[in-house]
Every structure is written in C-alpha cells, then in structure tokens.
Image (cartoon, rainbow, N blue to C red):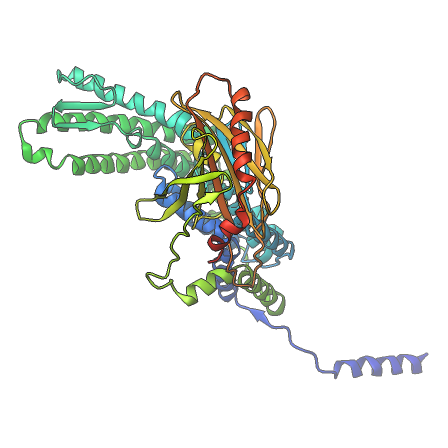
Length: 554
C-alpha cells in the first residue's frame, strides 16, 4: 500500500510540472469600452430603424424629445452595471436576439408590411420602439448577462419612449388641447379689456399684429418632457408606487399649468407692445424667452419637490449609491473578445450597403437618371398628358401619365411610377391626412407578362369618386396584397431580393393607379366594380414589368 501511495504521489507531482496556459483577463475599463464600441457599431444591424427614427425626430417636434431617450438609457445601464461591480458574465442568447432583430429589420426595409386598425391607427411591423427595446436587451444580455438585465430592466424598457407618443395622439389629444389653449389666451385678453377678432385660433390685437395659437402652443411638448423626466427621476430615487404615480401626474400637470401661464404673459406682452412698433418686431423672441424662463422655473419646482420626497424616504428605500460598492470582478479575455468579434461581424454583414455607400461617397451631381418617357399608347388607351409630382427639394415622387380610352373618351386611367422611393402604399398617406376609404379590397388583373395583384381602395370627397390601386414591381412580378377584416387591414408585399454582404443595384418600384368619376352619389359597393373594370381593361395591355424595369436599376 505504501508503494502504491508513493507511485500516485509521484504521478500527481509529475502533472504539476506540465506548463499551463495562463488565463488572460480584461480590465473593467477596457471591457466596458469594448461593450460601448459594440453598442455603437451594432446600430448598423438596425440601420433602417436608426434612419427612420432620425427622420421622425427631425421632422416631428412632438416626437423630437425621443432623441434624448437612448442617451439617458445608456447612462442608466452603465449606472446599473457599476452597481453590480461591472460583472461581464454575458450570454450568447443576447447575440441571438441581435441577429434576429437584424434579420427582421433587413426584411422590413425590403418589404411592405402594414397593419391598420379601424382606419385610424397604423402600425408597420416590427414597430420602431420594439426594435429599440430588443436591441438594448440583446446588448445588455450579451455583455452583462442576466444579472445586468435584471438590474437594468428600467432603462431597457424605457427605450420604448424613443417615440414618446403614438401617431393618433395628434388627432385625439393634441388638437383639442390647441383649442383649449386658445380659449384660455382669449379669455385672459378679454379680461384685460383687449378686443380680438372672431377667429378662435388667431388673437389679432390689430389687423397686422397678433398671434396664432398653433398646435405647438398647447404645452404638450413641455408636459411630456416633464413627465418623462419624472419617470426617470422616480426610478433613480426609487419612489414607491403611491409616490411615483402622483409625481409623474404632477409633472405633466405642471407643464400644462406653466404653458397657460406662458400664454397669459405673452398676451400681456402683446398688449404692452401695441403702441411700440419696435417691440412688435421682437414678439417671437419674447415668446421663446418667456417660455424658456418658465420651463426652467417648472424644472426647479419639480426637482425641489422630488428632492424633498427623496429626503423623506425610509432608510430601506434609499438609493443604492449610499450602500457599499460591490467589488469589481475580472473578465476573461477570450470569451469576451469572441462576443465582440461576433457583433462586429454581424454589423459588417448587415451594414455592408451602408458602409459601401459611405466609402463610395455621394453620386456625382447630374448623374441621377431622368424619368423614362411613358409610352404614348397602351392597348386601347392613349397618353393624354404627363406630369411629375415633386417634393419641395425637387425629388420626383411619382411620374404620372393620364391615359384616355379611344373607345370611350370619358374613361381615364392615371398611372404613376415612383422613380426614387421604395415600397409604399397610398392608403398610408390617406390615413395620415385623415381620409378614410369608403371601400378596401384586393384586385387581380391579367397582363401580357403575368397576373398583377393590387391593393385597392375607393375615396369620395364630394366632388369626385375615385379608385386607387397600388402594387410593387420587383424580380419580374408586380404583387401587393391586403387582408381586410371588420376592424383590421393587413397590407403586405414580398421581400425585395437583395441580400446582405452584396451591393444591391436594384430596388422595388411602387406603381399607383387612379380611376375617377364625377358620380359621387352611387354607393362605393356599386361603383367599385365599374371603376375596377376600367382599370382591368387598361392593365390587360400594360406590361408593367417592362415599364418599371428602367426604374428598378440604381
């Protein structure tokens, strides 16, 4: 037995002499810097969403405050990460979320998939706030792990506020508040003995001097800003629900209250400026100055109350900054660097088009292809006139041709081809303008090449009744579909054939048709088959694949 133990001891000792690879670790600062770099580079995987959000923030003042949300959430995630000692036990499930969201966004950018509810609520799938939440969840789970995800649940979910208010907010709440603000300002002016014109939204002190109560004057932006600040402050101060809810509601009401005060002070300024023309020229600056000062006062009042409530909290609900710091844990280098490499590879695959366009630079001026001339004759229809719908900057939205029937000159079909824009549905624009269709359905029409599937709707403005039908031509076919139930309409088309890691030189081409009649008394259910028959007769001789082929080349 002693001999056996001696031999075993010698064998164990011999294993100790074998050299082992030393485990390499990353410093916390370097690991966090790599995670932040990957979070920025990973935006290429959802570049379509980023571009859409930037466009919304730049063009919609009511939603522009969503620009601050990603930066606030980023700071709060780092705050939560520091509180758990920069633990980096990430999970590859986070990478699966990132890859899934990148694939969905790749398909979303190359197809049309829209849901409308009751014709007044529109949703393109997947919605942009959901993409933001999934992206933040994937990054947190990949580099920080489940523990960080539990610690940073609030900033991850708060990414939904990248679009603070839905599209229907303007018609349901924003416009009524505009009239309420105008009523308050008008009543205050009457209380000061100042006569005004009868226009409800215009307060004219003289024929040439007055103010218009625009939607931006109703205080909704200030109220939402204070409300979002209250949500973040309530989370940081760890208010309980019976404190949290009144603080948020009070912040929103404070924003409205100070906006009404701003309007009243502005009325006083206009009354003072009546005999002084030089003051009248600075009314706009005075509005900005009054509004800015009052908003700062509102913020001061809000944070004073919030700090007071924070000081009155019990000891067990104090912020965790007052607790001892968690010791920092070392991060193994190889697994962490593998995750970094995976994110960078995913960003390269799905952001190749963006990177290629950035390296190639903008196209030379004057190289943009001119609209292709429409054919003078399509079957039994002759081109009567042609024109372009353009934006303010000169971009052509649609190239139109009005075709007249040779057999019956009263029958006209207008065909519009978009030379620049991608997949698009006309009903989306009508819903945005508050125009509801009187009928909605699907039309299948034969053509020389193949059958054409169109999404169609009828509209009646009291002067004309028209049928609008749209389709998307791509990969040798023109297909667009819709499924309509009592309250929900689903509009979709096939994905574009472009693939990642390949410079795509083609695009899907939207085509729109309009058939009008002066008969506005016939019900849409009876008029739609008549208008659809005219369109079907036109499409029977129209080779859309050949007509749209020049527009599908980038």
